[in-house]
View 1 (cartoon, rainbow, N blue to C red):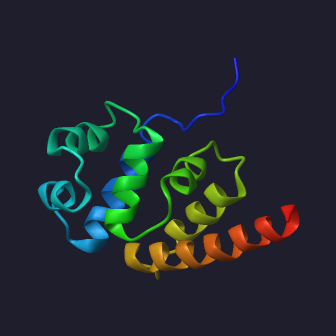
View 2: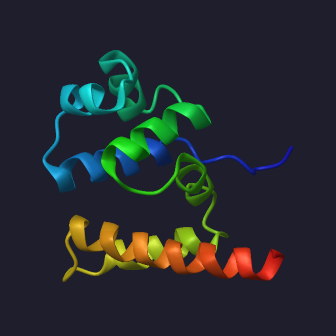
Length: 119
């Protein structure tokens, strides 16, 4: 059996961090994203892993990455993206907002390089 999916609770941790960084409530995110408040609540508790469509709607509402980037970023600690995020989050001088900003920039550059490599 392969461990290619996100570890349990990874999306919940990411979503909680993003909401706190933006001082946004679950209901506020529900209004912005069109995702039901009950679904957001279950995602935050870790009871469910979002579909790509739901992750994308949430990501777009938060103005962050695409849903595919978020789900890919949640993979086990073998992922370079996951290791970068973990290192940034471990730095006591960086706030959640700082980490999110650096990660957005990092992923834009990384995605651009990926497109160049395949194109």
